[in-house]
Length: 115
Image (cartoon, rainbow, N blue to C red; front, side):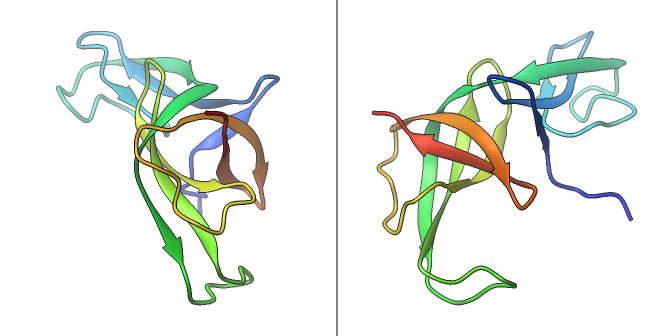
């Protein structure tokens, strides 16, 4: 089975996804065609900067993760919105907070709040 999570690579870290060559719609994971218009896609890299769109704190254990830990939907600069773990956070970061991608933790997209 293919891992459905966005892939983060490089220094500085970036999400490696695709963007439509026709309508420029960004997607955080590889796809054979654009999800918005069906057009052709090409590899694209997004980040490392982003802004929190929404956040929450998980207060129950999930897999090997022990609560509490924060998750956020992050709008990547010039890119898609991704679900990310917030490094070191045990409270929900404020909507609109600036974040940067950091190295993935256990394969999960991970960000840290910078402002």
